[in-house]
Length: 157
View 1 (cartoon, rainbow, N blue to C red):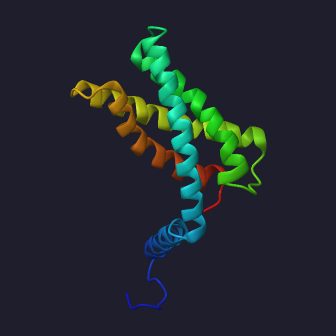
View 2 (view 1 turned 90 degrees about the vertical axis):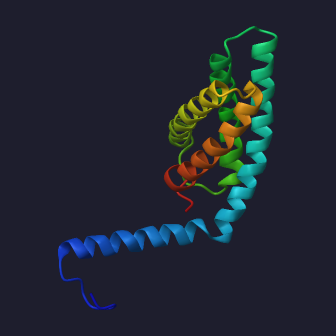
């Protein structure tokens, strides 16, 4: 197909539109605005993650909780705190309703929780200390959840 020529079939038109949408999303994800959101998210994530690790440590070392259960509970508490910061600072000016946004945030956090626990378990299974395993898992899960929230929840991208 010649560039600029109309698509010769419906399939080509759909494929071309899909590629255009993907490029548009990629351009928006690489914008300065989203970079600023990612920086703010990283700051909040680090603070909430430190709180998460503190809770995890306290649950395991002082309350003798199962490590996987403790990781899940600590994650959910820290994630709820993160939502408050997301609404007011990371994605400021969102038009998403409070309850609906929190529900979406929890759904996205659920994806992050599954990813976190799966990676946490996998890293512990190969011999990593539980706190190191949690740190590594959080890098992957955190970026995934940021993208889900930026695109699907707060629709800022």
